Image 1 (cartoon, rainbow, N blue to C red):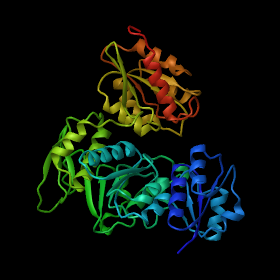
Image 2: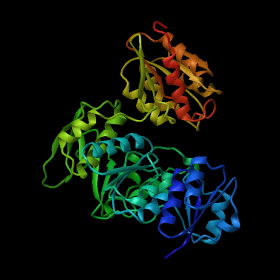
Image 3: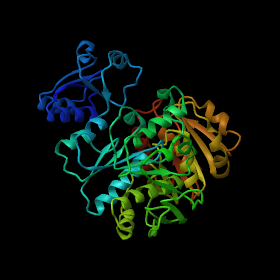
Image 4: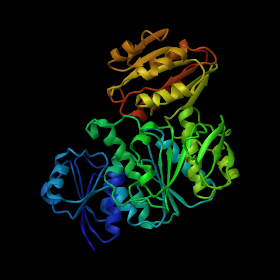
Length: 456
């Protein structure tokens, strides 16, 4: 039955949703509070879809039978409150797309590691010859891809914001990597509400579906009602734990044991991760989750091992951007919270010159102090306000400096580093005090490294 569907937000997901809704015979109107990028305006015009920018016409929006909301629009926004008061159904692009695809969706969420795990899973499936699409927070709009629906699989990176407005979306495989405090301002500062938003990924799964999750994460254990769910559970761990029927765990530093029928008679197998370029404990978890997705899709161990060797992660995630005078420079600008920075510091065994700082999100740095004390030779604060960083780390690192210039930060780090050291940009903070976003921050770091003179 044809509906009037109004799309709020005209970015990648919103425009994709508009195109899909129109392709399925619905009347569509797009509204964005901000200016719409020219490329998206062109897509809408070419499809003869009406749109407005720079504000919402509430009278028209309230005539919708259903609204597809951009993940970035908070619940407290006036237009959302008006729609809630009227009782208009509000869904996400993922929910809309899920109605119209016959493909198997592998949906991946978690506070940290989503992008790496999603890209690696996609890479493993694609390299093995499967027909697979990439969507969600990476790749292109799932809704737009579903118009043609030419893939057998989609690998999706999903944030809690995207999951908030899903109701009947049923992934074939769902993955939950971890849950740590982040974005709590969207969830009334409640970890429980944030956790339950993440766990919506399993909401509609049944006994024909799989749930891959991190058995080492205490918050998942606390809030996941595992005994009440019919989904086939595939927990994983960095260790062989007797308290779980594990689907995957490490037997050695770079060797995993995978068993898709944990607790039953099955044929467990060993898969080597030695060829993977990813570093750090968190990436061992990400890699194991991706391997379980690949095995679920039918890939064999030799296919997985070969594809691991050719994977290249997205920019700004523990990315080696240069090496000079025996010093490695690693761009981890995507580490915008304490947990992500902890993983970076933990994963690098060499002495570290750590560039840190930015817009503080209520950070508690105490968990980083032991690593900073044991591994950080010097700390360079890069931000407008570094007082909290100086108070937290001043007593545990041998040397602490501050600057508001990325070029200066990199020059000082290079001067302080000795052969064998690592200069690590892992800010633990948002980027908006000095940079447009974390990508801009990472690009400026890479450019500053490229500008260093040999012998500097």
